[in-house]
Image (cartoon, rainbow, N blue to C red):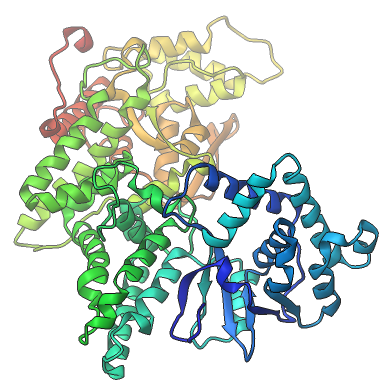
Length: 636
């Protein structure tokens, strides 16, 4: 049983608290667990028993307490503590006089009702809201055990006493109301990293003979380094190059502790050959804490025997810091930042990359991750392959992303070689913007979009047809066709068509020019670009000029929509509002025609633009195995 303020955190079996007294202060509400929470707890413990438990522990959520004169003030964990008491009294009524006591600051009658909840009636439970929930919990337990025999109840009781443990946590020198407010009012959970931090800074994990001033200095050093790591990980630009946007814990250093557990950095495997060695620490959210707790418990004898103290920095903390130093080195190295950021976006496991890093020198490591990159783009490595015919164009997302990334690397290589500028980052691909813009949880994502849409697609009403034709005026090859378009634009919605030529016919004639890409050649890489789904949905199958307006507007923080063709002004009505979005550098280059030395037509995506674009992709990515074999059919 924890006795000293030095014991900030430990795992406490229920049998060790049976004679303790707990005090529920006035700032806490009463017992409020419903049948669902009680049933979930019973099912979890039953599953733990059924899976076999030699040497294993089932961890209850943290019980946060502060020592009073003769009892423990419960800061957090009242609901679990009360439920376990009701469960113990049900399983073995004889234990009740020995069971732990729960006293309330302002609800004395609740204490009496809790101690006799099994024999109380539903009518009595109506007298008080606390009584009601306590009685419901007891009835839920009774119903759950209805079909169970005495042997099952006995096994459940023994497991509960010996193998079910509270994470016992005593905040050091902290106002209990402040702790309660943080954990409950602010809904900020006690994370594994906070529990592990208490292990690191616990004085009992330093030799008793050590100089107190030296211990304080070491604690301060660890705390300062800890804060630096957490502060850096809280920077999304750093964090989102090694992680995705799915992270729900308030602290991010937990990610490093989870990695250490998964890779068994502390060497705690029971079965060195078994792939399921982590099972000994359970499968709940506190398994990482139990892993580190076992490490400290296993080394306590060494701590006591060693007058120099147990060197946390060299044995455990050093291993944690090493992960962070690896991430820092990757982040600060321009090539590594981009290649690893790309692989993380392709769902490669960071643990596998760390293992490669630790086994190779930097040159060989870069070679190894380039091999992984080649695998990632294999589905779109043939630049002369047709998509949407058996192979979806979404296969090209990795290649187009890599094109953006390698473009950034190449730009900076030239900058580094320049005597004018010296070493510095000209452009770093922003993975944090890319991932936030493409967060699929919010209904978003990154898609492969046609640069030149298929002619006439989705033009079901007159207004859309007018917008389409008006935007293509600069691409019209002859006066006769311009006259046809002008007539088409001049007609009113209520008028009957003045001629029989359809918008599809007009578009077919425009795009029949040799300089345009025919429809049957539009599902190739030379007509694909990377775009977020929200922008893609905005203009869908709009013609190139409309897409160009939308994309370039985003660069200046505007969301643009083309409303209609205005017969009076003879211009398109364009509505504009604030709506910035991240546009990848190569997507922007497509719509500004950067890849074409002398564009022949800014109002359309022509064959010469497409050829120049495809050549740029090939020249940029040929080291990753992309092919650009001459395809005579494609050239036609």
